[in-house]
Image (cartoon, rainbow, N blue to C red; front, side, top):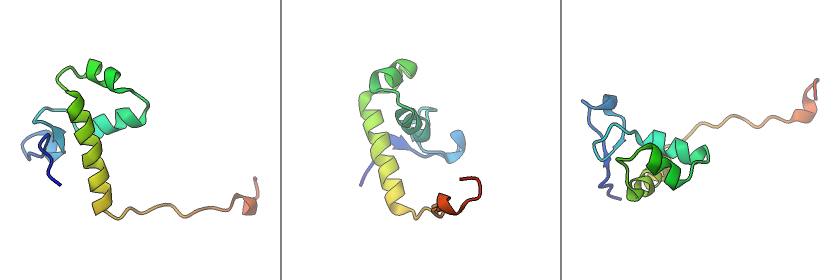
Length: 84
């Protein structure tokens, strides 16, 4: 998959993936979506962004997760806990 709106530059934001060479990290955009902001709110907060930037940030995040194995916390049976 090719990402035309995501840039990674060592001399910008420490190499963190950003949107179109702007100093707006992909993680910031994805985090705003996760926090419940809608696209209009994000675009109002970051006027240099375009709707397509948000779409590509989400696709990029999904691809990164597909490519990495994440460690998940073990499930805890709360019925075994003393304070349950």
